Length: 490
Image (cartoon, rainbow, N blue to C red; front, side, top):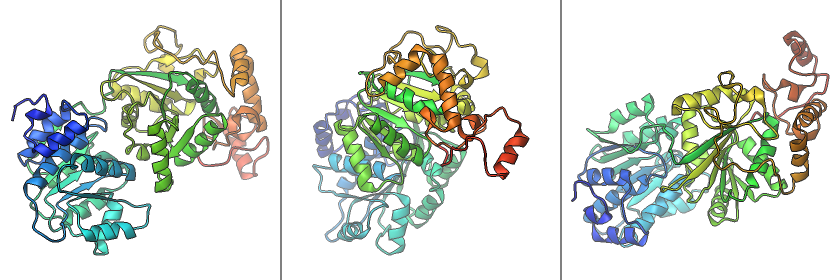
């Protein structure tokens, strides 16, 4: 094997795998594949720090299939010899699809199991036998406790997206799985970041692992053009609709903080005339599959997602990523914008910041080590949302938008054009009208969002300047004023 493989022919993979790779159109391995595959073919444990979209699925699937093909079991029911754990249904399904594609010329099979669907078909498939099992932790343990899963022959264990497993509370389930696996096996752990709990988990089951890190954790890709737009919370939907009308927005992924927020935004975008769909944990598996398929095929232009569900989204050609809500974990911002600009292509990442999200923005810029270009010349600009250390914002100053492509929000088109043209012609008057509308419970602020300290005036009647004592009296007395703004926070 070449010490620095530059093509798949340089990797000592069995011929059927090289043929399958050629069928998939792969010519050269990605950095994670160049580093990981030789190590795994030697039988070493591996700790990989790599984000989704770097080619890490092939980095572990190809060597696992290589080993399985070299040592076929005897006649009878196929035992589970490779186990892959994934945090979400979508990601598990995609990993299974890749194993199927790479193993198309091998006499091996794979199976995927996850929750959210009835277990009967999965149990039937397990009883028929499989070489590779891809699973989410909850359904795997459930079927194991029922006696449907036998781990006694597992030789290869892959833990994918370990940091997201931590975020979703699966660490205890992972430890339960590790406790029932055979002690002699090859272990692989992949994670986009390496927080202390994941490092501790890795030390507990990886034996003298080789660490492979293709990019420093939590760093943004330079080819992605980033910009920050400041606006009031209730104006985000109008700003997003204006930006989506730009012809260069071909396929957009929009992130919200909550499932409820994703559903509501999707409904609003559909009303505005956009082909939009939502994907999150409360959606049925069939609905999630339909949304993803529509997004891949192009019938869905805008996919609205939460962070957890988005870990399973690996769609090429995402032209724009919108951070509709800034994440409260700065690392998530990096993961989000990494959904565009894949495979060496350029991408555009646009984020909105309202007055309640200033700290999130500061944390993000601290993490990435540089200010994000900011856009201030749009009808919904809110100066109160700009961090104090960045006021006043100047066109062309450090951190300001500096002449790259910017969607023409000052030349609106489409179903909401008339309203946005009025806002562009008289932004100050429009802002006063929006504030009056919110006090009265009508106008553009009718989203019924829960009041927050910075948006009490928009959601609760007389305004945020009233003394705290009066606000407490009003809450105890059941309201008064304009009322409003119930619902879950988004």
